[in-house]
Image (cartoon, rainbow over all chains, first blue to last red; front, top):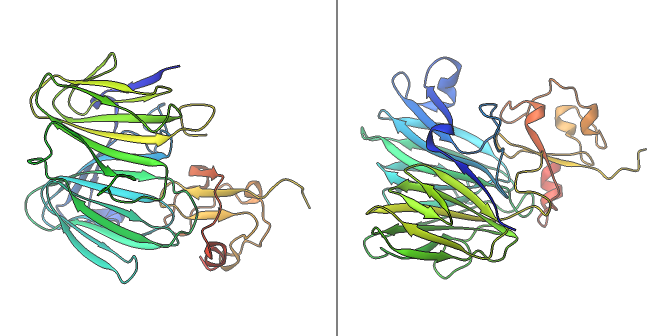
Length: 260
Length: 72
């Protein structure tokens, strides 16, 4: 049986977090830096909506504004955190293994699995705004060895195709959970079929740019939908340069929402 | 001693995990302390997220993970 929810762009949680007061230890770029965060799911009390979808707990559409803005070094455990850079330049620093300082630009993305404990900092050090999508997944086990992997999605070469960025396909980044992230950049009017691993997997489709029809749901820019209980999802792009993230996740046995 | 299985919970702010079996001895919570017996105003020792924003998880530890969790 098909189940679905639709989350329009304007219905998401909205935060503007300035680097001032007590927040300046958390948000970098004091005094004029600020982060804009549009949250599809998270644990805040902003909406009566969903705390998560399958193994997804955070889906943040974020802008770091002002040179030096971002998140100062802070700890995590367990969560598998992914970032997909859309614009600007992200300096990512983490303590996994021997530690990493990485610079990510448009099309670059990473999977940082915090596991038994890792700290990271996310910074935009240039004057240009940095725009990224952050996704947090519950892990398959607690206290895994921390890890960091990164890759690049070349949209010039991979146009008009569903490309798996994170998951178990060749060339995709590994992640310790039964989830997959794919991206589609397409011309208008093209049909695609997305097949999750099974009908026990749900798919969260988020339109970065353009317009998409997913089954009988029409989504505009920054709209999204979660669809589960189906073996395939028919997609059709309805604008040129439509850009979509598809996040597939194993679902709990009883319902589509996170257990709460 | 209750016969209910011990619970594991994860902080939704940062992923810090609380395991009833292990407690948090370094933070003054003895092994075996039930989640319901931790004060409602308790917050995540790593990130300050309030107790009610922890989620129960049914997850095993990676190899060596439980020993590492005791030192968290």
